[in-house]
Amino acid sequence: MAEHRDLFYRRLHSLLGVVPIGIYLVTHLIVNHFAVYGEEEFNRAAGFMGNLPFLLLLEIFVIYLPILFHAVLGVYIAFTANYNVKKFNYFRNWMYALQRITGIVTLIFIVWHVWETRVQKALGNAEVNYSMMESILSTPFMFWFYVVGVIATIFHFANGLWGFLVTWGITQTPKSQKIATYGAVIVFLVLSYVGVRTLIVFAYGV
Amino acid sequence: MAEQKTVTFIITRQDGPDSAPYEETFEVPYRRNMNVISGLMEIRKNPVNAKGEKTTPVQWDMNCLEEVCGACSMVINGVPRQSCAALVDDLEQPVRLAPMATFPVVRDLIIDRERMFDALKQVKAWIPIDGTHDLGPGPRMPEKKRQWAYELSKCMTCGVCLEACPNVNDKSDFIGPAAISQARLFNAHPTGDMNKSERLDGLMEEGGISGCGNSQNCVQVCPKGIPLTTSIAAMNRATNIQAFKNFFGSDNAH
Image 1: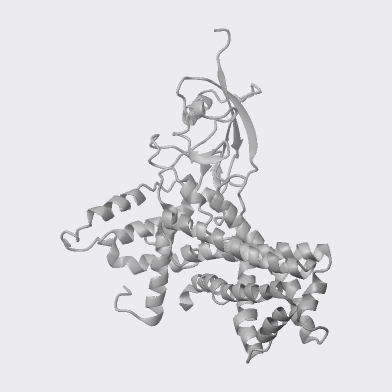
Image 2 (image 1 turned 30 degrees about the horizontal axis):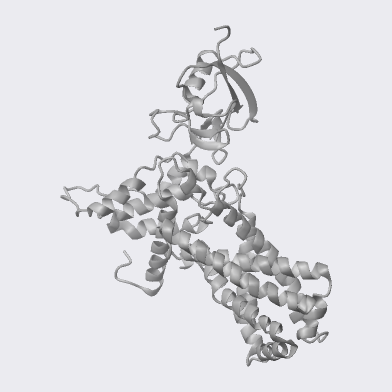
C-alpha cells in the first residue's frame, strides 16, 4: 500500500468518517438526548461517559486523532474542488458541494465546541454537566450557532455514509445508490431530530 | 422575402495557446436543419464578423460528423457537447460557443485532449496480445457480459465528462471518469482479464480513482449514455479488493 499512498489516505479518510467518528457522533447525540428526560438523567449519562476507564486514551485514539486526520485531508479536498453547481445543476452535484461546505462548517463548529467544553474542563475552568450546556445555549446567537453546527455535522455524516457505500464499492447500480440516498435522508432526519430536540431542552427547558 | 434570416454566433476565440481569449460575434445566413458545424463552415467561407470587419476564420476540430469520434466537443450555450449533433433549431439564440475550459486551448475552439490519452496509458486501456507466434483464439465471453461491456466501449474520449467533473481541474491530477470506465471495459474482457491487476494498479496510482468525489455530473452529461458512475463504483470495489490482495497476499493478485 505504500506505493499507493494517495489511495490509502483517501480510503482511510472514508473509513474513519464512519468508524470511529460516525459511531462516536451517534453515541454522543443519543447520550445527550438524556437531557430531554431531566437534568439528573443527563448528568448521570454524561458522568458515565466522562468517567470511562482509559478515558484520555479513548479520546485520543477514537476521537481526536481520527477527526484531526479526517479534517486535515478534508480541508484539502474541499479546497481542491472546482464547484460548478450553477453550470451543472444536478442533485448529486449539490450533495457534492454541500458535503464539502458542511465539512468546513462542522470543523469550525467542532473546534469551538471542544474549546468551550472539553478544553475548559481540562483547564479546570468548568464542569461538563447540564448547567454548563444551559449557560452556553442561553443566548439566541449561540443557540442558532449550535443548531447550524449540529445539522451541518449530521448532514455531513448522513451524506458521507452514502459516499462511503460508493467509495467501498458496495452500491454500484444507480438503483442501489438511489435507495442509499433514501437511507441517508432518513438518517439525516432522525439524527437531526435527536440533536435539535436536545438543544431546545438546554436552551429553553422544554 | 424582404430579408434573409440569420443566426448569431458569439464565439470565444483565442489566437494561440498563450494568447488572451476574446469574444467575436458573427451573423450567419440561416439554412434549414443547420448544425453548429455548418454555421462554423459559413464563417470559414466568409470570415467577416458582425461589425463587418474581415477577420481570421474560426478554427475548430471535427471528424466523423455523426457523434461517434468525439473530436468536435465544445461548450455550446454553457453545455459541453458535440457541435456536430447540436442543431441550431434546438438552440437558444444567440448561440454561444467556447472551448472546453478543462483542456488547454490550441486555437479558438480547438483544444488539446492529450491528458485523456495519458490517462488511458496510465490505466493500460488496451489488451496486450501481440507476440512472436499465433496465440490462438482467446477465451469466450458470456453474452450478457458482452452486452454491458459494449455500452462502455461507446466511449469516444470526447472530454465532456472531464469538463463537467468538479474534481478535474488545475488543483488536482484526477484522470477523470472516462479512463476509469475504460479500465473496467478491458478488465471485463476475458483476455484483458489476464492483465487486470496492471490496470487496477494504474487506477490506484496518484490521480487515479481516489480522485473521484461522487458529484456524478459525468453520467448526466455523457453523450453516449455510458454508466460512468457504475463503472467508478465497480472499480472502487475492484481496487479495494486488489489493495487487500496486494497487502495481505493472494495467489489471485495477478
